[in-house]
Image (tube, rainbow, N blue to C red; front, side):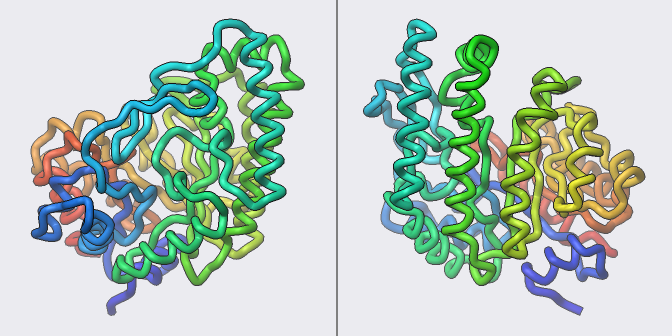
Length: 369
């Protein structure tokens, strides 16, 4: 019995018999890419090497950054945000706000520009999470789809998650937690109008992208928890964040996708609500540092797939290959060796040793069902 990556993933979501445990991750590690392919990355071959690398070790990949420029750049955009851009991530170094009036003006401008782009089917720079997800450099939605197809065709069957949908992450990264908190406290109607604009933008982008021939797996992400608690008050989480996310999940599911719900950190308080929607096929990630225990989840939610339970903050970074193999096998067995997809709790970041990443993937792929 042998399945393709797509078949293995779908059978995992559906709780059916599989040939081996599926693997899923983000690879932001040039050393690992070069090891897996036996080739040195250059600006010219970076996309081919990145695609080839994920095809060697993953059934499913999320995000897809191309290491075509390994030197970081500092850039100032049209709104006077200053960014540090690395090939795999973008960091906001400075925001152009000194007063709440500055914030309000920018929010109103952002809302106007978001709806303009929706009408034109254009990528809106002001509605992007400052992180390299997929398609940030495109001008139109259709270009995202074309670029996605090109990359998938180079992956030899490895599946790529549809460009992920997020709302509050974008607001928090653009306005910072401090300014966002002031905005929501002092001008809640304006803050919610902005979140609604971001929601409408994501719905439009989903409609443009949806095509099951490209991928059958979609993804939404929310900033829900820290290590020991929810990040925000329950009222904000349940009445502001989750209803908007539910709209996105409903839209993806309307096109026939299997859906992964991603929420950073401690998320136990919201899981009953999210799973009650009847829309979510998998929850992601399961950070040990945030008390996201695999066995506890499996006992409570036997029909939901568990994604990415191997700690990348400490274990994959500083642990030994043997410790990583043991943690991987424990996660699989705590899940009952079904409805689990193995990967790091965030990504194989540049500081993860190659031998440690391989220990995790090989333990999963070699586990005898």
